[in-house]
Structures are given as structure tokens and as C-alpha cells.
Image 1 (tube, rainbow, N blue to C red):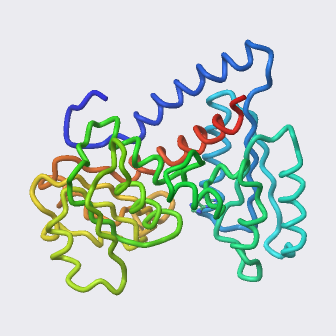
Image 2 (image 1 turned 60 degrees about the vertical axis):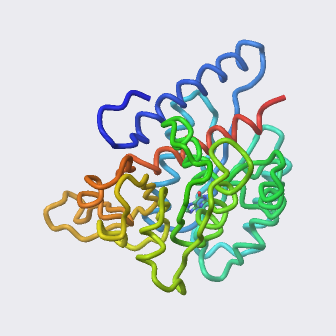
Length: 293
Ligand code: GUN
């Protein structure tokens, strides 16, 4: 990537990768096969979920994928949703699908995740894919960690032997990220510290970090005094904070105080325009993988 400043431009990088995916799709279609097809199940009216799913469907169109959006009311029963998952598992016209999280409280998310055929689980959330990832086997990597690995890789960030401190131990980001950063691979081989709500001396832990990955969902949690000079900062947070001056009445901020930290670090991802677009692109890469023959 062309580098004019110390910003990791996830938006531009995702465009580059989408262009590469488009070329692959053209080859698939030219050889007489159908384009990859992603389906998304969206339950209820959660505004953030609606916005994420819309962006996933739009991205499918941009690269020439087929996409199907299945929207259901928040009062759908668990059995009905499991039946829908089963239909998608059996549908040979669909290569991969996602069930957007979070689900309404009366539905057991793990039960639904476990009902998805691991070969169509392009979110990489099924225990089979999580287990394979932990063992270093071929699998679908969860989209956000996969996107972060690609950012570090394409921006030439040296990770081997570095101190990587992750904030947040979620199943979707923190925990898989800790596995990927420590595995014996290029863009891995780091010494990983996984911090969370019970961590004592968070500031001390962060000040040792060559690479910080913040994924806690708390606006501006990481401040400049917690960052070592020259560190690389990956900000996974997408937090809505009220802003009367903004058109929608809110603006998006990350888990990192961007303005204060950007002068201290060697590289940083902005919010928006950092990790978010890469997450969507990684989902497309997984769907392409699901379509491969
Ligand atoms: N909710 C927040 N992130 C994700 C994601 O990557 N996949 C799904 N299915 N739901 C999410």
C-alpha cells in the first residue's frame, strides 16, 4: 500500500482486495460456473445490525457475487430460525451464509451457530472452525480477525517476537485474535497478552505493547498515556456517541482516542474507515473460498 502518513487505510485496502475478488469472480463466471452466493439472516430491528448487513449485501454486488437477504421479525421462534438455517444448509445454490448477531434474548445464539454447516459457516463462528483455527488447520477465519491479519500483512508490520496486547476477550474478536497473533506463521509469532475486565494494571500492560488491538466497545478507552512511542494500534471499536451537530445525531468513535494517540504511534487504524471495511471484505474472501471447487 502507498503510505503518506501513519494511517492504516482500511477503506482503500478493502477496495484493492475487492478488485482482486472481482477478477476471481470473472474467471469463475467465464468458465461457465455461477458466481459465489452469500445469504444473510437478519432478525429484528437492531440499527447497527441493519447497517452492517446492508453493507455486506452492497459489497457482494460490488464484486459480482449473488446475495440473498432474509429478514425476520424479532419474535421469530428459535425453532423457526433453526429451520431456516437447515434450509440454507441444504440449498446448493448458496455457498455460505451468516446469521447476524446479536439475536433476540429468547434465542440461544450458540445453538443457532452450531446448527450452521461448518462448510457454509463463512463467519467462522462454528466450533469446528474455531477448533480448526486453534490447531492451525485450513478453515474459515472469523472476518474481523482475518481482516486485521491482512492489514498487518499488507502494511508490512513485523509481528514476529513483538509484544502484542489485546484488549477484550470476545469470541468474535479478542480470543481468536490472540490465537492468530501467536501462531507460527508470517503475521504471527508474537508474544500475546489477552487483557479483559479483570486485568489489573491495564496501563502497564499496554505500555509494553508494540502492537495494541483494542476490541472492548468502550469509546476512547485507550488514551495517549497508555501507548508506547512507535506502537502499532488496531482499533476494532465502532461506538455511537451522541453528537447534536452530526446529521444523524451521533458519530462513530473507536475504542482508542485517535487524535491523541496518532502522534505517538507508528501506525493506527481510524474509525470509521479502518477495521470495519476489512471485516466485510474478509467475509467476501470466505465466501469466495466456500465457492472454490
Ligand atoms: N455481529 C457483530 N459482528 C458480527 C459478525 O462478524 N458476524 C455476525 N454474524 N454478526 C456479527
